[in-house]
Image 1 (spheres, rainbow, N blue to C red):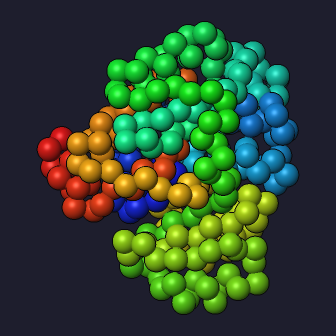
Image 2: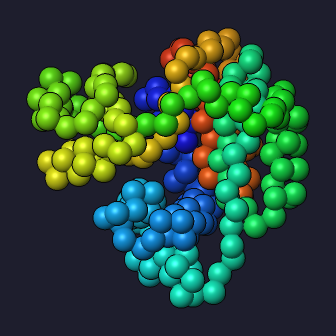
Length: 251
């Protein structure tokens, strides 16, 4: 998902994911397979696999699908070998964009990603051109109205948390990657509904966009997300709520 964490953006993206569940399952299966291959099949010690399995369960993926993906990653079932690639570039208005892919054909994926950038007012850049603008962190967002910022602070005061803040009515918790699992479990065990819970790339600065550039940028990100080989897209755009509402109403 994009690095920008506005609640309106999250709602929009969740709706798009729900409407494309089959494609989402394919992406999740790839992530589970690669996570198991790279770190083993124990979710207690492999945080990447644990995160992928939690996402799959939250999306109501059947347990058999999850188990088969893990076995393919471990080599006990035959399957395709995927390569991890990260692309970086710029969108309309100079927005920074990072694209994480899992592919069995690097040439195809590079061509598809480049075409998506070019056709939607962006430019594919060199490795490292925008990644320095992001920090890898655990990001957990609690459904609005479920708690208060003070309650969450008190609950997590003894855990490895970097920041807790309220944004658009939802409470956002940021952790270092190695503190994510423990914080996630504390919140889940207390029964909080977690709208977003993943290790993600968080933008350290944002780029404000007017309505025209915002519409172009969202179209670019949607085009990238629709590519079969793309797992996640991260960006540092900043779109005001009133502009986001106009764009959503026009679609």
